[in-house]
Amino acid sequence: MQSQWPSICAIASAVQAGTTSASELVERALIAIAKKDEYKAIIATTETRARQRALTIDKQVSDGLAVGRLAGVPFIAKDNFLVFGADTTAASNILRGFSAPYQSVAIEKLEAEGAICVAKANLDAFAHGSSTENSDFMTTKNPHDSTRVPGGSSGGSAAAVMLDLAPFALGTDTGGSIRLPASYCGAVGYKPTYGLVSRSGVVAMASSTDVIGPLTRSVEDAAMVLDVMAGKDALDGTTIERESAGYTNLAGALPSKVGVIKEYMAEGIDPAVKGQIVAAIDALKARSVEVVEISLPSLSAALAAYYILCPAEVSSNLSRYDGQRFGHSDLEARTLDESYGRSRSTGFGREAKRRIMIGTYVLSSGYYDAYYVKAQTVRTKLIAEFNEAFQSVDFLLGPTAPNTAFKIGENIKDPLQMYLIDILTVAANLVGVPAISLPAGSANDMPVGLQIMAAQKNDRALLTFAKAYEELLA
Ligand code: GLN
Picture 1 (cartoon, helix red, strand yellow):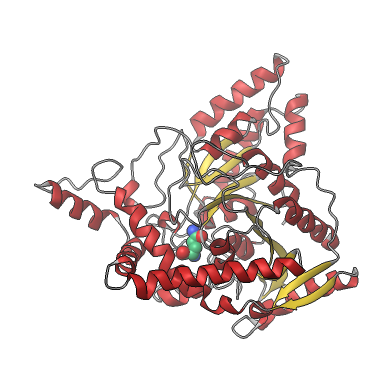
Picture 2: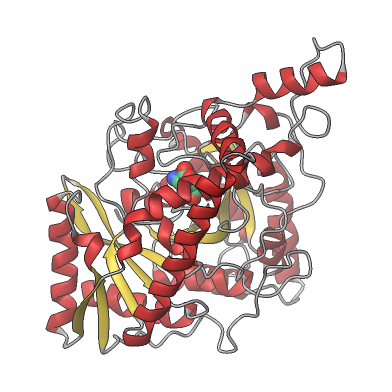
């Protein structure tokens, strides 16, 4: 699919030079959003504020003032980012009508460089899901085939980028939610090292694995967005320092050796997907990259561990939605207790309730040791196995998803089947390492994603390799 948007860098340069106006770019995005409405990628636009910001930037340019590195670049934020100009709903009924009192740090940083948020993208409510069908509002359609899901939970963001609504979109990745929709929609999806981007002002899902990252059409664009967002932040105690070289001006060199994860090429992966990944690996071999097989035995328990730890954290993070402070409140209630109960039972959807039940169960005194502690043990073993693997190779490869985008409705009645789709993405979150999903051809007439992971804090090296791989395909 040809894009109407040049690279982020080219757009910003044109705005800085005065050859394109920010207002023109915002209108172009808003027109595209209206035109592609039937895909249901967008919950709301922030058009009034976006137009105002564009006028301010255009005035700064005409006054000869400095505008930022992302001057006039329109973007779309997943609707779990606090953003001014539209409600922040996380696609949940319980947050309907909630207007953000402040903006996410990531959004503030992008705005400080001149980027303009034009809309909020659909997601699985509270980012719980792999298809965007768990949104309380609507189901987003895959840009390549509107009978199929875009993946989730950042399905609206991935679809928005591939529908060409804006040059980039933001997503969150707690167990794969940037990479999976990138894979299903044919976008580049980047999940940074845990802590590299501040989570302040983003609706929390599972705080020990939540990460913010970009969805784009190219590695260079993803790197540019990351470069603006990355770094230590006083409002998020888990943030880490950015790499001194930053994340732009990537040389794009192939590594001399990579590892292919044995467990990721095993049974259960659609043979057509596997074929594309083997072809990608062969292309690397043809460029003299040494490819070795690496086994990470604890991966077999990663998904089970994730679906204990994640709901445990979810059940705690969702306790703040009590009908008193944010969004929806049930007005029929006569007592405070009744208000908590009624607001939560009418406000939360099925999946949020399922996770609250699982989470409180695995954390309850009788089951804590049997489930929660065991899952943490698996997590520790996984971290050790990844650390050991990164002693012998700098990168680990495999598919992003075991399949290509499935039909809308196909898995929604079977939560276990839906959870299984995350089988290849959750490990990077549990271990906290950076991971990217890159377009790697197609299978079943739908896009396939190649996943590459690197050791923690090696984001620059990962993006460098990803760029070289992209050039290999070009
Ligand atoms: N699909 C996974 C889940 O439902 C991951 C979600 C995410 O990364 N936000 O938990």
